[in-house]
Image (cartoon, rainbow, N blue to C red; front, side):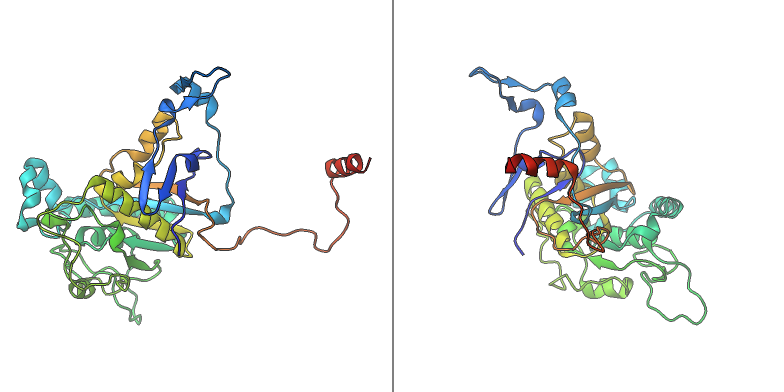
Length: 332
């Protein structure tokens, strides 16, 4: 499927003139405040923030060409604690595929309560998760199922004490499907905390997560001596967003990482008021959730409208008065 243009439905009627794809390269144009505004003279003036307030208008898109994304950064990991005290800890093998801390599990419990209290847990059609221990622990803890009931024999989402968690097993009852996707991993390379285990090992810890989209059992993407560039993380994020249009689900939770979210979201918001741009692009806290809308403006998605109704059933005369007036004028 060809890669199309995607954008956020956050005051984004002009975003297609800002974000383009040329082959596989992502080109980002400057924000509105730096874009010349045409005048009657040969000179150009530049839009100020006050100009933007008057210029930016809401966007309007067909509902079936939109997806709602609930973006979540993983809960606090042991590497976060060590790295804040000493940045060199991120390079330590001690934090290989870091698991979440006891405080992180408290963050998970609080977010789980939030998504249930708001009704979000019943709306999510699919949970996409980065295949690292801390993200999968967070994802199943927040969006996982209810307690097991007698007589029901299904595999758990997470076995007891997975990843030194000292946490009971989490069920798959009454929850959406979970799919692991490598495109939404954290910065690749150098930091052992961002290197994953084998899929075989993960399947034993998270039996009900679908790992079928991961091609290699071992981690072939992470290399010890090269850290993925920020712009490459952003480009990978755009590839991930375009891939989402191959999915039929309309409301998707994505549990991923700070760096991935920051560099992916920084591509967007250049057509917005600066405060909206800041809202979109600021760094995520541990276990923070933000909901956004993704818009397909390129016909990449093929899902039909499910709520539209064609009308004229049964058929009858229905020429509107303004169209009748135009028709009469044309005939005259």
